[in-house]
Image (cartoon, rainbow, N blue to C red; front, side, top):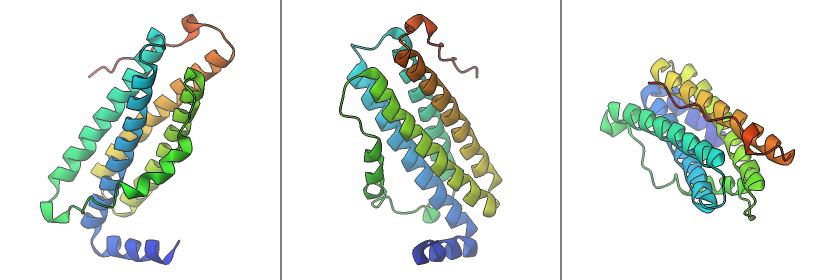
Length: 181
C-alpha cells in the first residue's frame, strides 16, 4: 500500500462515514465510465448488430443505470458536507483506455467491453472490502448488487464472444433476461 493510500485509509478509519461516501463516489464514477463504454458500443453497432446483440447492450445499459441510481440515492442520503469534490474523478479514468478497441467488428468490441467489465468487478470488489471494513453494510449491499450485475454481464458477453468466434449464428445467442421487479 502506498503512503498516500495508507493516509487515506487512516482518514477513513477516523471518519468512517466520510470514507464510505468517498468509496461510493468512486464506485459511481466507475459505473458511469462503464456505462459510457456500453453506450458507445450501442451507438457504434446500432445498424450492424443483430437484435440479440442490441438486446444484450440494452440490458447491460439498464443494469448499469439501475446501479447508478442506487449509488446516487445512497450518496445523497448522507449529509451534504460529507460528499467529496468531483473534479478529480474525470482524470483518474485514463486507465479505462486500456480496453479501447479501434475496429468495428462486433466480437472485437465485445472483447474490449469484457475487459472493462472484468476491471469493474475487480475495482468493485475492492470497494466492497473497504465498505465492509468501515461497517457500512447498506452501502456494501449496493456494491454487492453492482458486482452481481457486472458478473452477469461478464457471463453474457463471454458467451456472445464464444458463439461469434465459433460462427454458430445468432440463434445460439442467449436472450438477455428482463429484470423482474
